[in-house]
Length: 162
Image 1 (cartoon, rainbow, N blue to C red):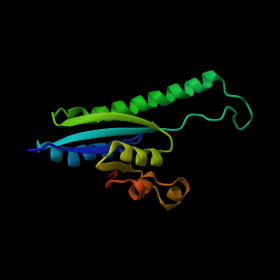
Image 2 (cartoon, helix red, strand yellow):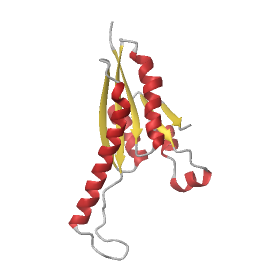
Image 3 (tube, one colour):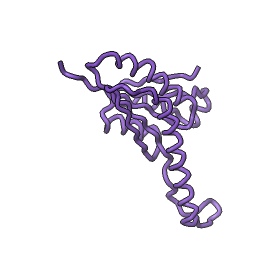
Image 4 (cartoon, rainbow, N blue to C red):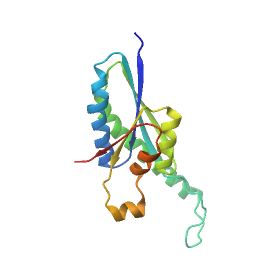
């Protein structure tokens, strides 16, 4: 008997919607396969940081100091660590021998980083939370889940927060 490997990528961020999607994934996708010893589950938690400051001038023309840029980078890392700790707490009860949890932090535009990670990591399934924005907000901001549903090279599960 050959053991099959399944890789599920869950995009997490600061929102309650993404943490709900992670909980749903564990309850409905990972736990269902946990009883089957023929499947080894890899759960990849992906957090996407915003891109670093590229410009050294702000709108008024003042130069950002190195200290300011370092403080922004430090804050972004603290935020990433905080999100990953919350996600790890949700995954806390996954101590089975056939489940491996991996953490990945990317940088850039979330929709592009997520789709690239799916391809690079060879994910079998992508799970995303939905902010459930209305038409106008989605038109202005764009929708990460819509983009990923159309462009990711694997099945995409979009979980709505109740």
